[in-house]
Image (tube, rainbow, N blue to C red; front, side, top):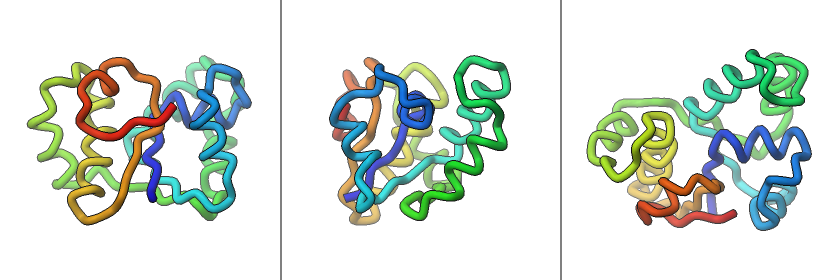
Length: 132
């Protein structure tokens, strides 16, 4: 099982924020979890940290935490992901489409995938299995 991480899940986990769902926290805390961070999640997290909208001190600290975790695969924003976003009209926000598309692309390659998010629009779309 691979777990694709939405931006707020990544930030809240690194902060130790109580808004992180119990199931998502258990997965992110499990040393055996296979974690996938879409490139857009990482870019969005850097943007949020750089604007001081989180308790993570700097983008460098965010990168260090991600790079130090051997469970993490950063998935590129590639042609397959971008093409998949074109059919995701049920999701309003571009970043959310790309995160969801990453999960869909992985699933199309035979991976069993769940998305760690509490985003209502992604969850309501029912395009991918969601855990929170």
